[in-house]
Amino acid sequence: MTQASLFDRFPLVRTFAVAALLIVGACSGDKKDDYVERPVEELYNEAMDLLDKDEYYKAAQTFEEVDRQHPYSVWATKAQLMAAYALYERNKYDDAILGLDRFIQLHPGNKDVAYAYYLKGLCYYEQISDVRRDQKMTEQALKILQEVVDRFPTSPYARDARLKVDLARDHMAGKEMTVGRQYLKLKQYLAALNRFKVVTEQFQTTTHVPEALHRMVEIYSILGLETEAQRTAAVLGHNFPGSEWYTDSFAIVEEGNTNPSGKILGSWVDTINPWADKKPEDKPKPAKAPDDPAKTSGGWYNWAKFW
Image 1 (cartoon, rainbow, N blue to C red):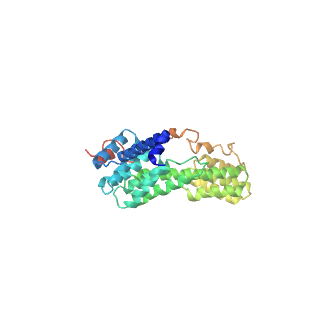
Image 2 (image 1 turned 135 degrees about the vertical axis):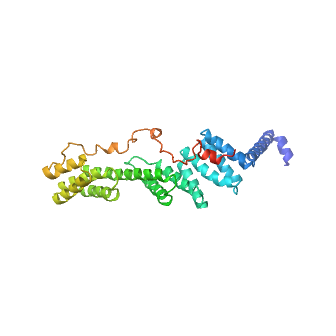
Image 3 (image 1 turned 90 degrees about the vertical axis):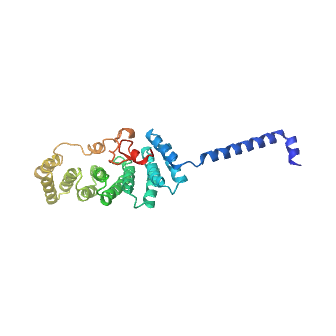
């Protein structure tokens, strides 16, 4: 049976065939429109305009188009970094990190590589969770931000990175304190003692050290290790003489009262992270470094856009 006779005998076949051809033609036409090559200036300016309107996802796509259509242009390098910034603003942290890693690998000597590391650190920092949860993001933020401090100490991002390193370390210490308190409530004294020792030995500059020393005094007293309790209380008194934790530790050593202030163990857990019970959007954003690609006078907006 010929094709002509098939269409004559089954009109529906002919209808479906025509419809399929129209669909294929329309799809092929759309595909051509998506990949029309445009001047680099036009594409880059469009992306910056979208960024200015807070349309971050569209801006990122347009910056990526700059890199795709003009890979050897000087603006392609800038577009790679700006695409990552747009994704960061859109809270697409994983995608932003991938773009930043690519930028760092391709342009290790670029003058903006310090910012790439800093922005990568912020991507992790923004995802830090409550101390009662896994702290993988805190560890990554601490690692990358410390790298900014070590490798680019004179960059405009070092100061803010150093501040966030201290906050991340405090958060890590808070995690150890939370676990240690839980062990102490369960009367697993050695496990609790090890956690508090980690705080005093690895996080000595954090705000949790006075309480960690006090908890160690408590545990030593419970275990009957009076000499260790006195020695730890002396360290606490020497370094934090005005602390309420020293007052309690002194009472334990001198009077044998293991709960002199009547505080309930674990009552400080919820104060470690003040945003624990709030919505994510209520959590304040970290302050931007001086040379962030902010859309303000003198910022990346004027530096990057064609005029």
